[in-house]
Image (cartoon, rainbow, N blue to C red; front, side, top):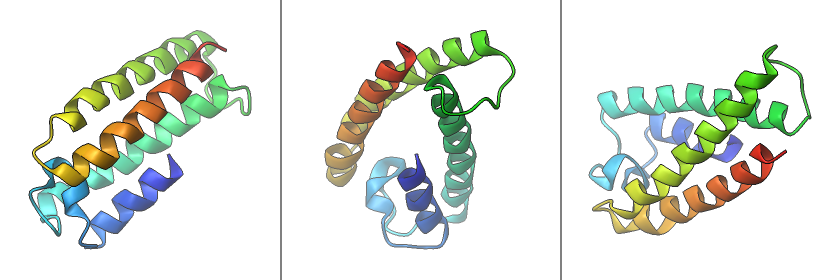
Length: 114
């Protein structure tokens, strides 16, 4: 999650890495997509908290049942991400983000299993 946060922050800062995100249509993201990247950073922080807590490394969220269910939902989200990124028109996005989502999905399933 930390590396995805750094990647999204680079996109917000204007790094010419847009071919790896948001459909790959823009080399440098326009403002609207930069706002999407900012939202992604917030989501990745939440995802990280869920996974860290489910792995037993922290106790931040006071509802263990919620954490269990949310971790499975997160695994499903990453599985869906494989399909969506594999369908991207951008070859760089297909070849980097789809495998990344596969790794994240697998690792999240392992953590969700407890």
